[in-house]
Length: 69
Image (tube, rainbow, N blue to C red):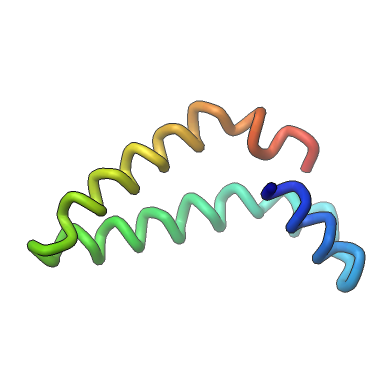
């Protein structure tokens, strides 16, 4: 799914190698900011914890998620 989105974007607007290599770090950063925001709101703490688990999964599976970038 992610690879398809990136390839589709790259077809329309070419990404440099540096931009492609930075994609995982952008995703990690967005996820951490989102978790930090969620954890501050009592109603969203469960969602924050789910997103934390998702971030850990993405990190542990980065080769599967981003291997071809």
